[in-house]
Length: 550
Image 1 (cartoon, rainbow, N blue to C red):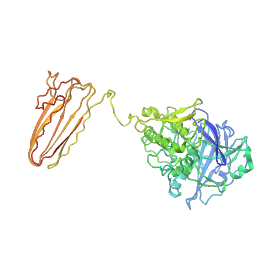
Image 2 (tube, rainbow, N blue to C red):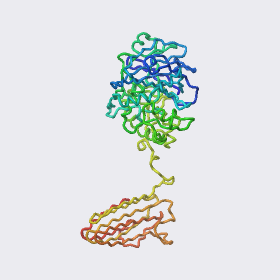
Image 3 (tube, rainbow, N blue to C red):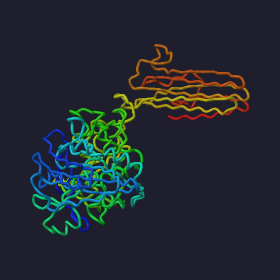
Image 4 (cartoon, rainbow, N blue to C red):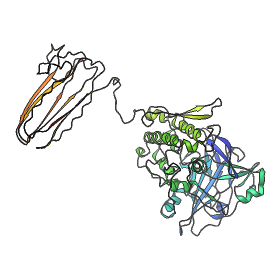
């Protein structure tokens, strides 16, 4: 994907953050990256990867990155190392550090690029040797690739020491890269690695190299959810990322894709996992279960048994439900935070909102199309197109009731709904609930139900009268009515006499036309002009309660 280069000052270091634009996995020929032999060994890690295919490390739009996480199986301790990428035909500005690996170390390697696509290139069987996964067959992921990612996570999930998430300043649980408040249209891609660039050459970003190269070196990096979380969001809301010792920079600690995904295994529900409509797991524009699982396996995520387990609509529903309230509630913290991209938002708060809106839209996950409503967050832009504020929709947790409710198109003025559930036993109390929902045009008409019940001792009676009415029901009635009843009313009289320990339940459903006059053939009180006549006769020990809801 195309990227925009952003320089950000953080403490004493300079971070070059690149903000992701929209995905187009098949738009251009991929950059190529040659994987050295024995890539998982100490010498292999210290051997530079060569970038080619028309791509250069001096071009912000094609810069590519490699990141390794190492597990010591004896102790469960993790380490970070950043293999160097150089442009083919150049030499490193400073030779990479050869790491000292733990005995029987388990190494996982991940790749990221600022270009649209990255194709790994084999050297004497290096891809098979390092168990590299670039996609599914000839269908590459795009910006992502991995070597032994699945093997690393299989071991680390059992042996690694993973810190708890902790709480943010607002008391909420700290987010992870699998939080719907953090993800975008293509989660779990790209890496935290940074390099030092000097002209056409590069070097590892270490304290020693920064000192040697001085001001002529600038930091370049790979825009990612990982960098957003660990370098921007966590500091703003008071959270601490999972940091491990760097084998190429003594004394330094770093977060990696590996550590981010491991800690994300502690993420509470709902958990964001690679969805079927992620651009990187499509094959010729179509969803593919095998490619989804090939990607998920390389980042330590639960595999999908069917495409339903990676359902894009469910993913979008969670995205819409979780992210907007979090972004809105943490405004007081993030509005003071540094924006990763000043061209997108003027602070971290507006950046997060604009990023959400872009991912939610048709050019991202197309949640608008899947859910049937526009983004719950609308960025307020200045004349340069930069978000300077956010507007939040207040439509039932940012969803406009088009989800989970089956409605008819003609339900504009209401519908009568009646739910009847009655359980009765002898010597119980009797309750009556009348739920009446009426249309706007019912000004003078009313359904009257008269029920007379005579019961003996310890007898319980329950009656429920439910009236269902619809604007369009002009000629159809569920109850027997005379054809000449134009100005009359449907009256249902029910008389029930029951003996001890019997249960009586009566349900009357009356459907009426809009313009009905109040003519009643039942016994009514003189003052009941537009009301209802209800008469209840009760005998000893009989309890009757009536609730009329209109």
